Image 1: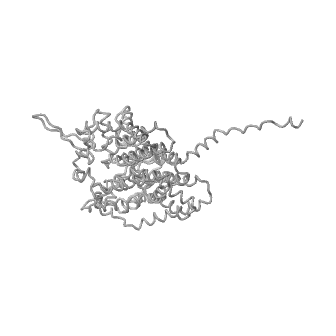
Image 2 (image 1 turned 120 degrees about the vertical axis):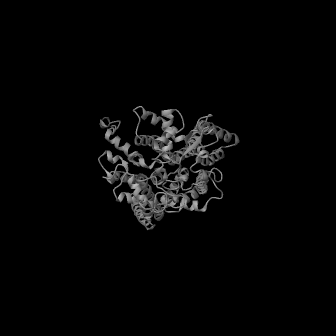
Amino acid sequence: MLKDRVPTELPAAPAPSRLARLRAWLARRALGIVLVAAYVWSFPYFEQIHSANELPRIWLAQAIVDEGRFAVDTGVRTLGGPVADVSELERQATPGTRAKGKYYSNKAPGMSLLAVPAYAALRLFGRPSMRATTFWLRLTASTLPQLLFLWLLAWWLSKVCADQVARRVALVGYALGTMAFTYGVTLFSHQLAAGFAMASFIVSSMWARGVLRERWLPVAGAAAGMALLCDYQAVFLCVPVAVYLAWCGRGWWPRLRALALAGAGAVGPVLVLLAYHQACFGSPFKTGYDASKTFAHLHSQGFLGLVWPPMQAAFWGSFFTPDNGLFVLSPLLLLALPGMVRLCRRPGTRAEGVIAVSAFVIGAWFVSSIAMWRGGWNVGPRYIAAALPFLVWPVAEALAWARVQRLPLAWVGGVALVGVSLVVYGVLTPMYPHLPSGQFHPVFVNPLYDVGFWLLRRGYAPYNAGWALGLGGVWGMLPYFALVAGALALALGQGGERRMWRWHAAGAAGAAVIVGLYALWPQGRGAHMDCNGGRIGPGERPCIERIAAKYEPPRR
C-alpha cells in the first residue's frame, strides 16, 4: 500500500518568472550592453574644427544623394574654401570659356558609400544640420559596424582562447583602450577597414579549423575587398591573410579552390573602387592622392608616399614617444609581444601566430615608411590602426598564461597596463579626438594631462547623453566614465574566482600609479604654442585655449 502512495514522477520545477529570465539574459549580455552604452554615450562634435578627415566623407555622401555625382564642390563652397583632404582637378575648358576646377574627396569611398542610406533617410525629413548629419553618419557608418565587429571578435576569441577572463579583458582593452575606440566613434575609415580586414582573417581561420564550411570563403574575400574599398592601406594586411588561406589548404587543388572562392568574393568591392576611380580621376588605377595638391610634396616621395629604408624618427615617434607612441598611449599592446611568441611556439596556433606577427610588422613598416607618418589630427599613430585587431588574441594569450600559471605579478602588471590604456583613450576620445600635432613640432608632449585632464578640471565636456538627462558639463560624463570602469570590472568578474580580486585590486592600483607617473612628462607646452606646432605670436591664444573655445555647448 505504501508503494502506491509514492509518486512515480517528481513534480516539475516551477518555471522561472519573466523577471528571473530577464535578469539571466542581462547577466549574460551585461558586458556587451556596457560596451554599446560606452560607445554611444558621448558625441565629441566640434563644428568649428572642419575636420579634413570627416568633412570630405560627409560631402561625398551628400553629393551622391543630393546631386547624383561624386564631386564635392557644394560642400567646399559651403565651407568657404577647400580643406586638405580633397583633390582639385582642372577640367578641360571649351574654347572661349574659363576652366572650372572640380573637387573630389581623396579618401577611399567605402565609408561614404555606407553612409549614403543614412543620409538619404535623413533627407526624407528635410535638410539636416551638419551636427545631425555628423551624428547619424558616425553612428551608421562607423559606430554600428564597430560594435558588430566587436561581437564577431568576441565570438572568435571564444573559439580560440579557452580562458574566459583573459579574452574578455583583452576585448575590453581593445574596444575602449586603443585607437579602435577613437576611430570607432568618428568618421575616420581606419577602424572600419581594420574590422573588415580582421573579419576576413576570422572567417579564414574558422574555415581552416573546420568550424565554417567552404561556402563561407567568398565572405572572407568580400570582407578583404571592403577593407580596400574603405582604406587603401588595408591591402597590405590582406596579403598575409591570402597566404594563410593558401597555406591551410590540404593539397594544391583545395588551396587553389579556396583562393578562387575568396577572390570571387572580393571582385564586387574591387570593381566598385575601380569604377569610382575611373569616374572621378580618369583612370581605374589613379587615386585621389595622385591629384591632391595640398600634400603633393609628401605623396610624391618614394612609392605612393612610402620611402625606403623606413625612417628611424617615424618608428620611434610612432611607438615610444609620450605624445604619439602606441606603447605609451595603449601600453596593453605590450602584452601582444609575449603573446605572439607563445602562439608561434605552439604547433596548433603557429600559423595564426605568424599572421599576428606579420600584421604587426606590416603596420610598423607602413607607419615608419610613410612620409606623413604623424597623420595630422590623431590620438596615436593612426596609420597602424588596421593592424591592431590582429594583436587581440596575442594579448589574451599573454593574460591567459599569467592566470593559468598563477603568476600574480604578471597578472597584476597586465591588468595595470589595460587600466592605463582605458584611462588614456577613455578620456582623450570623448574629450577631444582631434589632437593637433605637427610633423616635426608636436604641440602636446603630454596629451592626457595637457588636453584631457586640463579640459575636465575646467568643466568642459562634449555633447553626451547626460545633456538629454539634464546633466550638464562634467556631470554628464560621469556615467560614461562609470561605464568604462564597469566594462573592465565585468570582464574581470566573469571567472567567479573570489581569491583573484586581490590581484584585480592590485592591478587597478598599479594603473593609478602609472597614470600618476605620466604626469612626470613635461606639461604645458601647448600653453605657449599654436595649434600648428609653432610659437604663438602677439595677440594669439595658446592652442589649448583655442581648443576649449570650440566646445559647444558651452560649460554650465
